[in-house]
Amino acid sequence: MSLNLVRTERRYAGKVSFPERIRNLGDTINFLRDEQSRIEDLLTEISDRRSVSYELRSAISTLEGAAEEVATYNPPRLDRLAVFMPSNVLLYSYVLYLLVPSLFVHRTDFRPSSSVKSQAVRLHRMLHEVHGLPVMLQGVSQTRFVQDIVPSAEVVVFTGAYQNAEEIKGNLRGDQLFLFLGQGLNPFIVTAEANLDLAVRDAIAIRLLNSGQDCLGPDVFFVERCVLSDFVTKLKKELERLRFGDYRDPEADYGPIYYDQALDLVSLYLRRNHASIIHGGSIDFRLKKIEPTVLLGDLRDGIKPVEFFSPVFNVVAYPDEGTLGRVLQRSPFSERAMGASVYGNEGELTKLLQRKHVVTVNTTLLSVDDGNKPFGGYGRMASYVSLGGRTNAQPILLSQAVSDFLRTAG
Image (cartoon, one colour):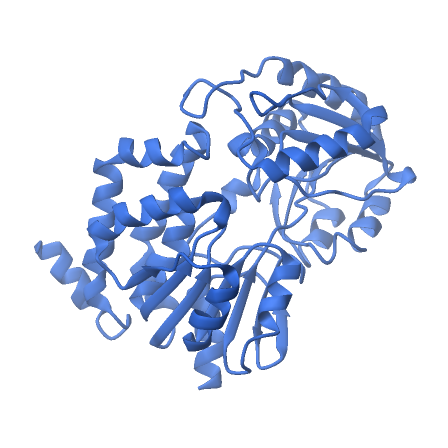
């Protein structure tokens, strides 16, 4: 063991329940750096190379900050944690919900999403050989996981659909802490003062993250009417330049849709809303390719944003910030409040959004994606913490939530 590692363990002794496990996380960091190509080969089965590169950097950064995070929030030592893993960002989620908590949880059991089970199993085998921590993959049905694994856990983490979270929460005891991490609508707002070149560039970057298959992707792009024409013209021009390719192609701007359900949902959505399509709209089912598509609507005609994983830009014109602000305070935006991005000057609209969202100004939500800090908003259908019959919609970081709710309860 290196002298630096000994010093690190001593530094966090008394602040971290299992300081000796810091070395296991260090081994994992080294592995991710040294065996990057092996990780990329696996993850590019379900994600494009650019997204995988970002995911690797985020995973390493979060592991590097794990000990400091846990020492800062000082969660109580737990015996068991049960996690329902998401169907995307497999490595980053493995770090967030399994490895970082190992510093204060004796044993963690997790169930991979059925849509990426093969990749999740292989990723776990690869990483478990390195870290050797009591992190156990349970390849059972969701029903069996709820019946056999969840009852022994003090904390349960669920990533997925709100309706499924509510069903699982209803089966828990009052002393079990339940964390739900869902998906927000993440409105992307372009005001009259926006730098349109920047707004278009960032709109494409965040919507096409993993070819549109990322929870941070905006489901609606609100554009002030006075700049709508210029924004749409620039957006269409930039979309024309994008290159489709295999997930392993480092030069590809977007790739196939991995999730069959997402492909089906988008196909149905575009058919029903074909009159609103102003760019793209074609789907190649053989290649599972969805052409980057722009649909144009207007706030005065009403809006029912749809959440799906795809390179689809739902652009909605709005008359002024006051009108838009009133819409964003109502359903479904209030219930699904998580993130929001505003392009232009900070003003009353930004302040209003900050009441329930994490808000970025003239940059995307990637700029505030820090695995060692709470993330999210205050929409109940986006994320919440529940204990003893009480539910709090709030940004979530596992170590902080355990500290805030279980240390107080104890």
